[in-house]
Image (cartoon, chains in turn brown, cyan):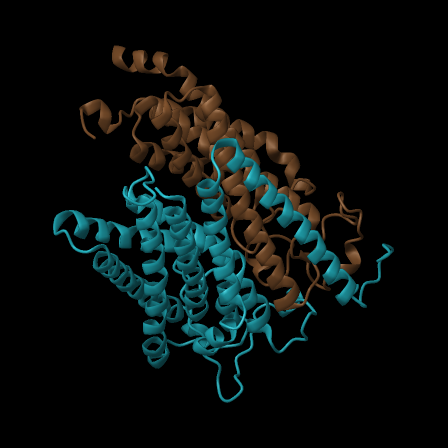
Length: 246
Length: 298
């Protein structure tokens, strides 16, 4: 019991980092424009896949970049706060690259393959470009493709997801120094914080301009609690290095 | 590592990823996995029984993550226990993953169609026989390429990524599934499944389930769908996944530290600008829908 309390007291900063990372992931998921199954039939604006799947796909791609950067920096010396910032930035950019390439190719398919212009059904005018949206929405649908506002929102979502996942990984590496356990647990924390906001989103969201985005505070509260629990468990898991392994 | 060697490996990974993305999308088209499957499932229920394969095992990202992790796990076991050559180990790993895919495809097809007998949707054994091997073949190619590029990333003499081999493969499997589901599947779900409707008209929600069931000659099968999607949906999925793998690894190989972050950010900004150009192109060439009757001016 004393050991557990000592571990929690020693690694409290890692728990805070995991909570912050979890909240970043939760907020990021709300930014990603997902249309679910209707978007795959060009019946709804956004990317034609599920919330968790796309957020995890982009965030974990960022995690790969962050893991490599962590290794490079730790070989040069101890990993401090400034190095963590660089690692998180690398993870965020990795996730943004994944999500932007996915969205641009998705728009190729909508425009060249399906023959529909990208349009949002949630707003009459695009808040960024001020272009009209309603006349370009196909009859009987709730929009299609990724207009500029959704594209920018998705990029922000990738940024936050990659940043959060990388931060969780760095905090776990501080605790156990084992990339294998840290990567697996970071994926787990990522999925917890990607699944919980999905209940807010209920299948489809267009991005920060969607009325559903106002539900973010509820997700922050839920993910704060979930990430705190994950953080408390995570700092009590020792890596193989602690047992004298490789 | 020599910079030229590093760039060569990144190019090799990008090429493998392009092939993996293409085959992943075609595998999901033959099997009708992922989101467009909702229409295949719905069709019989609204009075349109069909001979399209139906295997929504799960979302594409988790299923591909599983195949790739299994493939990499088997390959790693062979590499460590019997010192097999990496190429053979990866090939055997991909084969085991393809077998797993075959088991899931068969049970998913039989289970789903058997449960729809009341809608006159039957289990066609010839459809099962004709499609499962094609699905497994594409799954083999996808898994082989992803496990191969993960090996290049993981091997300490090559890139030397710190994550375990199966975890790297699992993450790339998840990514290829997410990309395939977001890009190529739209070509299958929004265009090929509804070819009876006017091109560019969009799909009215009232027409859901009314999928195209007749081919140029006879009844349409999922092999026909893969043939059609291999002309556009599959290759663009490959480009998307290849671009992701190549651009992400290129910036971290060619540049170091914050320069790599800046290089990545510039790539992202350029893609956002390109998207705006694409959007304007579509608005100008397609114009507003004539049926629109609201007050907002185009």
